[in-house]
Structure formats: structure tokens, C-alpha cells
Image 1 (cartoon, helix red, strand yellow):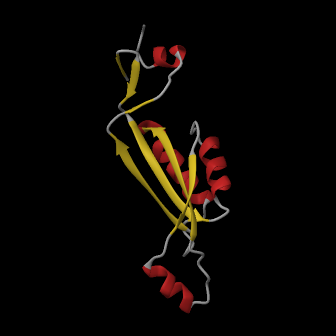
Image 2 (spheres, one colour):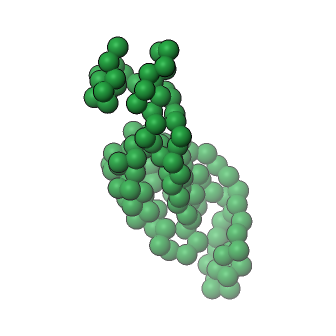
Length: 123
């Protein structure tokens, strides 16, 4: 963590993105927070994919309405959060969705002084 003119910039963070069927986001967010995530952003989307055609043959209906969840996490906690979300969202089931993780070059938000101190930043 670095400080630049009153902005605390975090450089060791990742973005976990989980795309699920409509109605599953609350389960995903609960699992993420239980695993240590500080919060999440949920938004709605519409999506289609190649798997829909194959799943239709199996008689499984896949709703095009999706919920997308963004979770920003410290890199050292990200794998644990990722795994807990994968299980909670039942992503090992065809048609339930997908999850991926991307490194963040940097991010900034308000960080309480006591938290910044734990990361080696001092005013």
C-alpha cells in the first residue's frame, strides 16, 4: 500500500468476477463475506452462450438473465474467497455460471488509518 497526496493506493488486490443465474447473487455474496471479503457489487446483465444450445438438448432451461458480482479482495485471500464462491454458486453444475479472477494494477478508496497502519502506512 502506498500513499500519494492523501490517496491510499492498494497494489496487491484482485477482482473476482462471478456470473450466475438470476437469484443466486445473495448466496454468492454471503459466501464471499463469510470467506473474508469486505463487500461486493452486484449488477444485472443478459447473456447467452454456446452451452445453451447443448443444455437445451438435455432439457435444461438456461435463463438469459444474469447477475454479475464483483468482489475486490487482497491477493493473499483471493484463492480462498474464489473457492468458497465457486462451491456456493454450484458452478460445477452445467449452466450455473462462471467465475474468474483478474489482478488489479492498483485501486483506491477510503482506508481507515488503523487499517493503513497494519499495512505499513503511517501518516
